[in-house]
Amino acid sequence: MRPNSTSATEWRGVFLVAFTYVYFLIFAQFAFLSRLAQQGIGGAHLKAVMGAMAAGGVLLSLLAPRVRWCASPVTRLRAGFAVCGLAALATLAPLGTATAMAVALAVGAGLGLVTVTLVTHLRRWTGEHGALWKVGLGTGTGYLLCNVPQLFAASPQAQAASAVLVCGAAIWLAGGGQLRPISLPSAATPRPLAFPFVVACFAGLVWLDSAAFFIIQHTPQLKAGTWQGTAHLWANGVLHFVAALASVWLLRRRGLYAVLAAAFLVLAGACLLLLDPAHTLQASVLYPVGVSLYSVALVAYPSLLSPAATAEARGRQAGWIYAIAGWGGSALGIGMGQNLGHVPPAFLAGAGAVVLLPGAIFVIQQRTREALATLAILGLAYGVYRLQGPPRSAAPQTAVERGRQVYIAEGCISCHSQYVRPNTDDVLMWGPAESVDAVRHEQPPLIGNRRQGPDLAEVGARRSAFWLKMHFFNPAQVSGASIMPPYGFLFQDGRGQDLVAYLESLRGPGVPAHLAAETQWSPSPQAEGEASVGQGHVLCTRYCATCHDADGATRVRWKASFAHQPPDLRSGPFRLPLSVDLEQRQLRLAQVAKFGIPGTDMPGHEYLSDREIASLSLWLAQNIAQSAPSGVKRMQTGDK
Image (cartoon, rainbow, N blue to C red; front, side):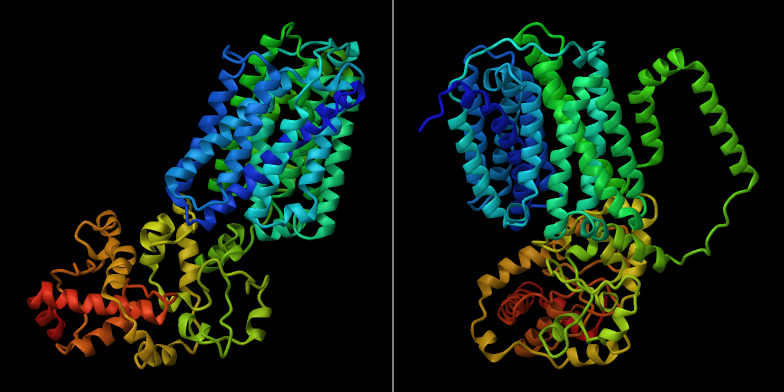
């Protein structure tokens, strides 16, 4: 039965706000990114996709209140949710970079149209009675639903399907309703704030929220203390819900500025606590509280609290707020989290000066003596601190020790293990097994439980320092189909070199014997029988051409830095002596392709199957023999 009673109509706004948050948080920020990773879209391609989403969001946020072709708010809102739902549905199919950009553009455009239309005409769906409380309930319910463990921990496909259902429900709920005037308590906006100041405050809050979110999501120690486990998720959901209602109470009693200032202080406290993993628990309490405090205001201000007199004016204000603060602030926050790995205290001080300045002026004017006393106490405390002298510095760390801290801070354990399982195929691919006792005494142990990337227990014996550096700058370019994001920014301040030093240190005492055993390996007879020259050509294009073609991307970019230029496969010269006999040459090339060449920048491709290695070596052996007979002669003599 379609809800058409007055009471049902007035509660639609609660669910429309909640469903908008669920779509944005669960699908746009989680499921969509996970689907891109599953499709192998990363690095520069990922940035292009997310740029398309931001472009769609900014464009529709600004255009939605200005376009006259569809005056009906109901139709606009339904159209926005329809676009969002279709975009979520599209992610269930395979995506290339171009189609992913199109889908991302649709996600951003749909969200821009939905958010601006919803807040501009929110009175249509909330009615007059308790409109502000309904905004708080909608926001709190949205965050609570997002933290339900069954939804939060679901697969990206299940989350995308849930987003489709949410959009369908929102389309159904959007119909009907009458535009009614709303009478809010005069205390809600005792002194209207300047609109540019409101935008700046919201931008700073979204910036802090996004930076903290990215840092927690990509730091295992922090994530384990905040979003992992059923108890943590339910606690987060409840904190969000209670804080949303508290935000409404504060808006009604003290006005918008009190909420903005409180949200900043709480989020800034969470960001400071995140600097030390030992304070993760306290940060996990403050973070959801601060987010819900400002999230309610982000909906309530343009829809109910703004002094704008018309729907058109409210819409234009909403467009600027969501374009600048929502999309712009989010992008800046994620960039800060990705590039710095923390929120600098200096940035918090600067943002605090902007957000808290009006409150400080008011306190000084109204409470001069109290303000002077507070400043005197702070000055005295600082003087005592200075008299104690600078703190004693800890013993200097080695590059390896610093690199291990970078490894932990950047969340490398999320995708890489450091434990070769004995008596398994691990030993052939990654190196000799190490005892568990040797690993578990590390502080903290970095065994890891996921392998989206190769195991790194013996990576120092399998990859050169220069190869690791090239790989950090552009993994997809250096390693074919790698989904690892780039980490070139780490080399701007020395962290990259420290991380390379740490990885180079990862090699156990059994490596020399293991390297000797690799020379006895050969593909299985079945794999050799199934080898395909065509498949070998494809594999060579994907994994070898970047270094071994004259115009290979990696070869060209790092040409001046190679100690020895990778040989051009069609002309040589080649480093290793190889037999003229095609079968022997193919076997040696298979070993090189599988395990690389120790002591050089030539990596192995341990994760390729025997059939793939046999196909690759067959194509290489035939191609070299046919294209460069003089090169074969050079290989026999070992010339460079």
